Image (cartoon, rainbow, N blue to C red; front, side):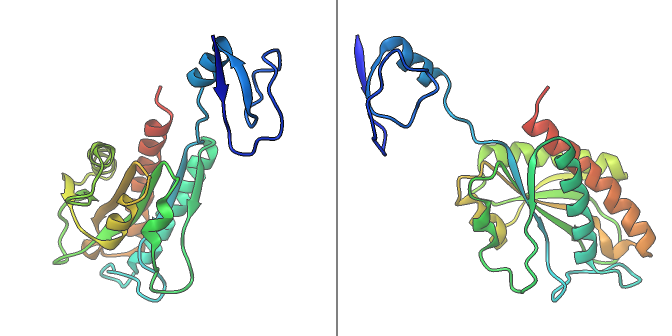
Amino acid sequence: MKLALTVVGLTRFLDPRDHLGESEVTGIVDERTWNQIMDHPSVRPASVLIDPGHSPIHSGTDAKDGTPEYEMNLLQAKIVKAELDKANISAEIFDPPSDPRDLIGQKAADHSIFLSLHHNATDRKPHYTCVMVHPTKAKPKSIAFAKKLSTAVANAIGQRDFGVMENSVTVLSESEETNCPICVLCESYFLDAIDTRAEAEKLSTEAAYAIASTVIAELQPA
């Protein structure tokens, strides 16, 4: 049996005796060659897009001493990226100098995970760790990963694990409309309940290592 393999960008014909690594060609291939091609599809390397929430212009909430949320988000983003780099996982921090950060969620396209990093606030009291997903657009993998991430962060910093929380925030809505299979927003803890920068940095750092470990386990399962 012989099969015709047609690929855009035809330049020559493939002799069945050619090396099986040839792909961007058109011609006749034998059944064994076709099966080997179909059994080994190309795989896009794992990659993570990290969004340190807010910006220097609109810095989000703050600790009791005025430490801005954005700086803790960025601290986490840098730690997570460094850990992913060590694990040979491609990671990009999207942190444009301008504000508003238009269409940030759309940049999740072609990434394995879109991770938006934030710190919560309400009434200057500690409450919980949670990970947010979109209420109607969240993919199954987003929800499953959110559960694991919330538990990992809560355990690492001694917070109550709220788990998955639904939120229709724009970054989740836009990112879930791309082909990125996991799109989450992590609220590590309530920053407005924290007294000092030193305490905030300690908690955010511990949370960041837990975030990185959870991402690595997801993308490089044992």
